[in-house]
Image: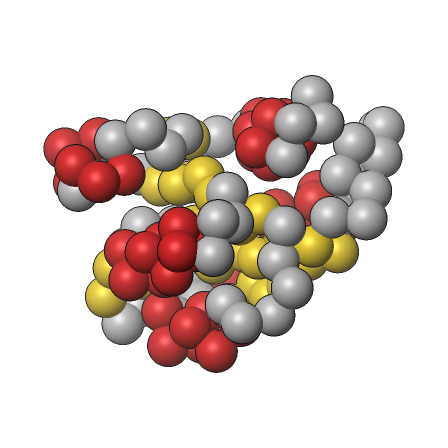
Length: 121
C-alpha cells in the first residue's frame, strides 16, 4: 500500500472495537499516525486540541452523537469524514457538504477519503 497518508495525524472516533482496530491498522499502513481510536464523544473531546490533520468520525457513539466534535473540528478547520451506518437524513444541515462513507465500507475507501480531505489523492 502506498504511504498516501504519510505524516498525517488522523483522529479516529469509532465505538465498534473490531472495526476501529481494523481501520486504525489500515490508516497506519497508509502512513498515518492514528490519534485514538476512541469510542466516546467525551474521549474524542479530550483529543480535539491535539495537532490533528484530519478525522474519521462515526456518528452514533456509546455516549451520544459526534456532532459537537464535528463542530469543534470545523472551528479549527480540520477536515473530517463521517463513517457511519446511518443515512444522510441524520446529519444536520450544517454538515451536508461533509463526505459520508456508509458502513459497511472498504477500509481502503476510508484511506482514499482521508487522502482527498488532505489533498493528497
